[in-house]
Image (tube, each protein chain N blue to C red):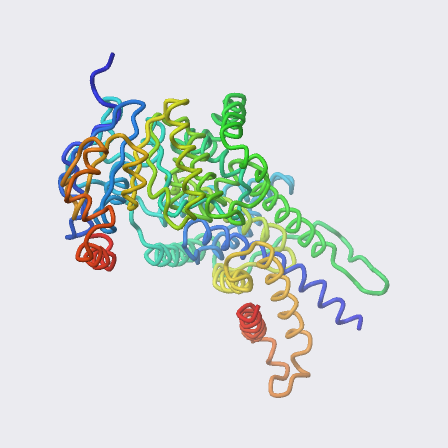
Length: 291
Length: 271
């Protein structure tokens, strides 16, 4: 039981970082029709910058700087992906984001090498909550990401700029007709999304080191989270991320008890978790059809 | 007094790849005027409008609003110059409340290049925009009642009002309405029509009404153009057009041949 609780805590925490990646994906997909595969790269960049910056700067400043710089990089990626010409199709844009992801991974390999990067956690000791040992960094990740998701939702609902984003998601043609520059909005969506991804890994890196090629794992996880809500709902993407995180930890924790997997099963944590997600998504979409 | 018309379209050509949708159309709308553009489905009415409003780049020809050349400018520039389109099928923002839909009409007008400066300009003008919103609510009290409801959960007629209100928030001098009556109940169309005439007469907003329903369009607008297969075939005062044999048979419930042709045109909308 204790072990289970511990796994769930870790799962909810890593899951909320995936959730941010998924939420960003939903934001970009709804406003532009693009599935952005560079999401993982934004997360990796956030982690790597933080590891570098936290060496000489206060943590808060280093974190804020990492998020802002990655947000800026995200806006550039958005600018390229959406296209300088009027009609870059979403499919072409998707390929562009794949290319950019590869490029960023290669640059990271050159600049940071191929070993995992991490930095010390913010807290010295684990918390003992009723016999369950909880690493406070995990709680921090879960808390900050929940806050970020909440702020994003409120911003989209309550501010005119946020509503302009929603308007583009609702009907790009009508948004264009009222005078909103939908490509400029797309750039903003990329920037916000990149910032969210970076935020997740700025905080998660002490407990989950990043490698130059972690981007694939993160992008796929984020996509699974987003797909959980049909790439349409921020709330469901959040739920999807949490589900994926917990599923993954359960596979890690109980791999040796699953027949045919054994200890080696841990290597397949992501694959196994994704299978679980696939089943859930299929079940959910079937459920929706019946409604 | 400025002699030039408010909107002047000169030999406009709109193509989709090799398909010619609008083939050299010239027309004009005077300030404060109501003008109808009628023609069968697939005649190129919407293409013409989209070419004027900046959704499609015209291949040739000129568009001037108040003497300013707007040919090939993006939709936002056209809105800022004073021409706002109420699109076919209304196209409200369904998940946003009615009031947000209206306010976005004003926000879009401030949107030039990017989000931050647009938002700042919008906030700086928020007093004037609030007054404008009140004005729209006075014109359409129903929208005030519905202001908190998601626009997607209002009736077709109400959505048409939201779309018109949203366009009015951009303070247009010319309102281009693409299919006012499409898919709406006759009673709803009647009250929208009356509203449109009042809006035009009391507020001085010029109206270009693009309609498949020729009876309605000719009744609402003193002057009209007839578009067929991308070209203007007739134009003039509506009461004269109503008496014209061709128009009568083709658009005012005439021969069976023509309505069958119309059905044929339905199958290929953009030609």
